Image 1: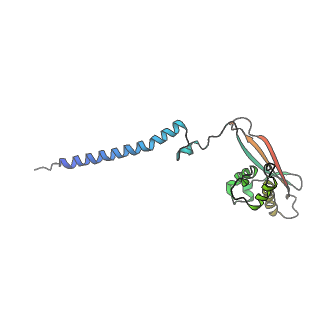
Image 2: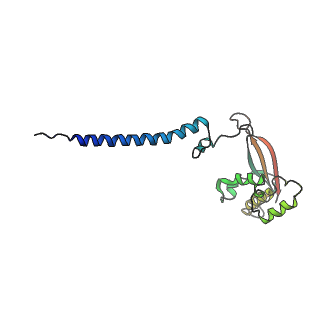
Image 3: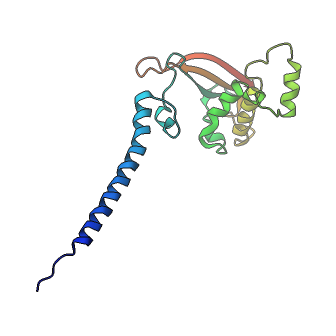
Length: 184
């Protein structure tokens, strides 16, 4: 007598396959609906905000900064902050932006020096980039500390130039906005 397949086993396998198919269909729908929704309406719904992370307000543009130093001989040199200190790796420009915009005065627990400076300007507005001089001087001193005392390459001043990029691919790479200078 030949072997015959038990029909109950075949029905059990088909039912299990249908359950897996139903689970994967529900899982696919649960994952796809928010994706389609976020891309269709460009909303910042977690975790889909990364898709809109690179969009900028094209009317305002964005500011960028160039750090330069003037040597004792009068030569102007570029000073990439990453070469001065690697403590913050690529975060130097956000530090500069925070100093220019006085963000250290906007926190709830101010450093005592910042509190004194803010108290001195009660009636007036705090000047833009109130603590930027200290940052520029510190970078200049770090640069000079690596050179011999008699070197003509030592810096006499450090300058930070701000430029505004309007987000255009072709055309002007940036419009000069303002500049700050710190003597060493």
